Image 1 (cartoon, one colour):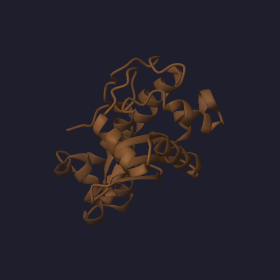
Image 2: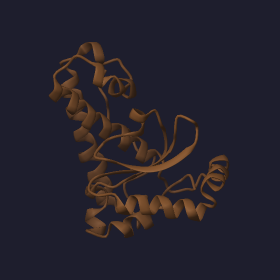
Image 3: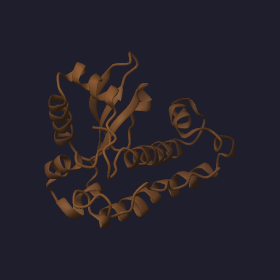
Image 4: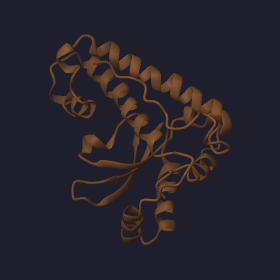
Length: 193
């Protein structure tokens, strides 16, 4: 089984003016595709692993018997594939407010505005490349944190709910070094809230 680039539910220009079409095209068709290509290439060496779900494959990496460089390639590129696939799904042109999540966010963080403030600050203060996350932890409680590179909540036993890509390729064509502006504008294309 080969991993494939997921189709977007919207056109590259659909998230304008908040995320520009050129960034979306390069981000999806080039960056995300590159992660998939590298992941598939290394998995050709391990036919017995090709039918595993990617989340399971990555969780089992520390205990697997394979070359350390291959483990790193699977971790980085598999993580890039997982994170991007999730990121594309939570954005869109129409709001689809999840009322149960909205109420849980209010109960956990005090208000939607406070949640947004904490999440935005977490994203804005993350150093370097990575992702900002809202997750459900192993006690079924909501948490906000950031992770570096292509690390992902599955390794902590957490279920992702919302994610924001903080790699420069996600925003640099439009926003250059203005990450804070990108983060603020991204809320306009998040479907869930």
